[in-house]
Length: 293
Image 1: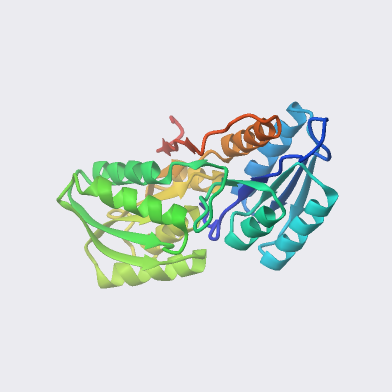
Image 2: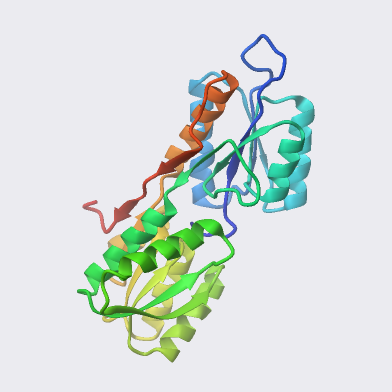
């Protein structure tokens, strides 16, 4: 996530047209987190493409990472009577949609504290396991590892849990430090602190692209580019380019926001047609270790 996505996340909500003989009234309304992050751009583009393919109107509003604006956007879309409402998956937004009788589909980050119709997103735990296995591999199953975390986001918690679980199978790879670093600047400071406190660190796992890219900068600044390996999560273009060109960045777990966007619209349309949809729709991430991949 680039994170972040740091906050990262985007979700989808779906409204069944209550008493209409037509398939839907005004199509899909989407309230997106931002237009600045590549993850959300890919997600939105995929939604637009699928809505066009399904011949369903799609109206997009950008929340600019402002919850009050997002809630206002959702209220406006409810008044307009859209059939599908796509919104960032935070609890107040979900509750507002559900209070209006809207069925919710979360995308990228699962909802907590509220039941939703379906979740479409990366299998973050599996991705974390893949990161752990890759770390063990590049360290030849022995070494000290640090983690840059974002513990208040459930998707990141799942990633870190999967990473740690994978390393349990490699007892000579030990986690010696873990700090929170949400923004790129915070992640840079966290990486610098951990490298100074633990001079024998061999690898760093960043919860998202920003964290990993910041860690790579810290490693290079410390003169440890021939020793410390960094692995990230998200797989946006900047991170993949770093893996291709920077020996410090040895890999990144790659999410597929285009698949999420397409699946979210497919699911919303299925709901509007009265079809049953799966409660969980995980998308397995890939592992990118260079251009050959």
